[in-house]
Amino acid sequence: MSTRKRQRSIIKPSCQNVAPPSVLSPLLVEELTVNIMSRLPVKSINRFTSVAKQWNTFLSSSYFIRYHIQRSATSSCLNNHRLLGGGSYGSSFRLSDPLLSIIDNPSPYPTLFGRLLSDIWHDPLIVGSCNGLICWIDYRESGNYICYLNPATGTKSRSPYLRYPSSFNSYNLFGFGYDHINDSYKTVAINCDPNGDTVDEKTLVKVYELGAPTTWKKIQSFPYVPKQSGFLDEPCGVFVKGTLNWLCTRSNDSLVVVSVDLVNDTCKEVSLPRFVDTNRYRVVARPNLSVLGGCLCFSYENRQTHFVLWQMKVYGDASSWNVLFNIPYKDIRIDRNIPNYPKPLLMLNNGDVMMQTSELGDFLLYNPMHNSFKYFEFASGTTLFESIVHIDSLVSPCPTRPHRIRGLPCLYTIT
Image (cartoon, rainbow, N blue to C red; front, side, top):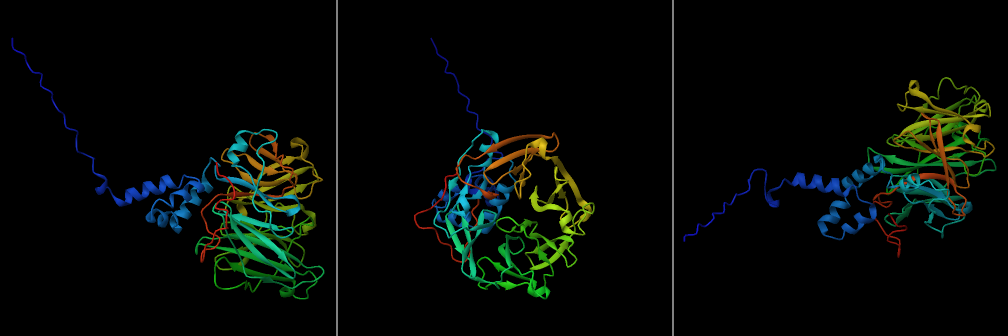
């Protein structure tokens, strides 16, 4: 009896489009690596810098840092977006959990604020948050230091000591933003003395570039007087498209937006909506600037009953002003007797606008298209003055000589 041996046919896999890792395009590998790494939270990226020297060099490069913050800022998931606020009467800073978890789970009392720093000088002023860097004022006698912190990496620095004239009626304003042309961060300090005899005596403007060897530089011409808020700290500059913007008055008391270009350290006027009476600024009740969807916004109170907000679709083009919403206070249950509120903070991809409605941690999500809204508040037991939106990043506040806060590799947990 013969047995037939079954022949096994071995089918060789096609070699087309298959190559060993050694011959893959370096450009393709780098592109994939950047794409994957840029989606990770900062805490994870910090771990990967210890894998190899090449990884540390790559993940610490200015190219990757800029790419990561760009992806974080434009991401719709809000995993890297948080609320930053001052603690009780400025005694500390606090960061919320990612806004995604707060918005998706709008419980009556969502996440508590985690404390950032508690050993800071009395009543610091949060100037702003830009690309993951927090800028605040460390007040001292007859002047102050401007401090910078990246809470995700635990690095900090400060500016040279800032001196400015002081008088009984003088006040100071500050702004913090990014010069995208030179990849640098700048702080603008404005000292105002309404009793000054000349324009130069009324307003003194200085600029400091973070990490630069030079000290504060004076802007030669600023023929405007920035508007006071009349409540607690003076308004900080609103950062939009490489500029810092303040509401100011001309010599005839008319209201105008004055923009400081952070690339060339010059100022210019930006017109307000032509339908708004700005001939005398007191006619416009509670005017304020903000930014939503990357656009400059101007808000005010109409007839003590409505909150009106205009959005400039194309920065610098006065014809691009449009009314984003006109809300009756009674419809969204906002108390108009609370100064400086409501305060627009963020626009989501679905059109919802997040606004802070009081200094006690009350917030509102409002959809202008559907005229719908929902509330949430933070039960942190901490007063939140001037909360702003903060984005986690790898940007260093000390580009010339980075250093890490001893014992604090990361000041809060990223989830």
